[in-house]
Amino acid sequence: MSTVGNPANIFWHENPVRKVEREKLLNQQGCVVWITGLSGSGKSTLACSLGRELQSRGKLSYVLDGDNLRHGLNKNLGFSPESRTENIRRTGEVANLFADAGLICIASLISPYRKDRDACRALLPDKKFIEVFMNMPLQLCEDRDPKGLYKLAREGKIKGFTGIDDPYEPPLNCEIELQLKDGVVPTPHEMAGQVVSYMENEGFLEA
Image (tube, rainbow, N blue to C red; front, side):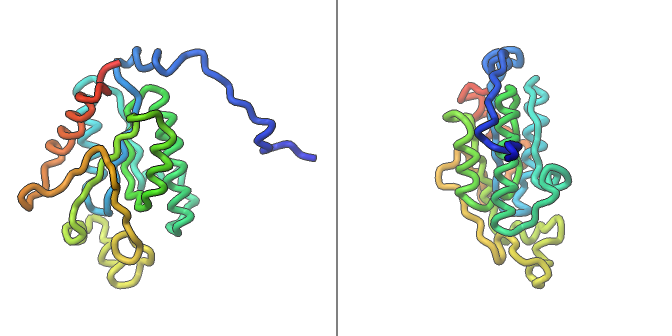
């Protein structure tokens, strides 16, 4: 009988270099900044701005962009509810590895289902998962429509599009919520600054 792939024959191998040692080397705390929201809400723009801001402060981060991941790690997944769940599961596992390495991992994905985001949160120790909700109105996202996907969804050429004919479940207890201020979208620099301020206050930017 084949034993290949049998969990009973797979054992965890401890690394002699501990996470706290890697964090001390980098002078930061490994964590995951998970940016969620509708298509066109500004997730990728915020992720890039945040990465640049952290870089300017001498902090090591890496962005996991949902679209980029579908060119490689998740290229064999579609957009059914099951595929969406697997997409987020894989990304959460990779993000957890980056955080364990001592990096600040910035994950930018629609991640529409609350249970999937919560499953990613559960992978990390307390307070190491920072959920950032891009709470932008659907109409604003449709007006932007940077990829032309809303137009296709409204025409019925794309099925199961989040916010149109597939649900987006907003976070219930996110660490940071970004939204319009007096009807105006904050600049990427302002939003990144808000995230960095939270990280500073919580001690993530020092070992």
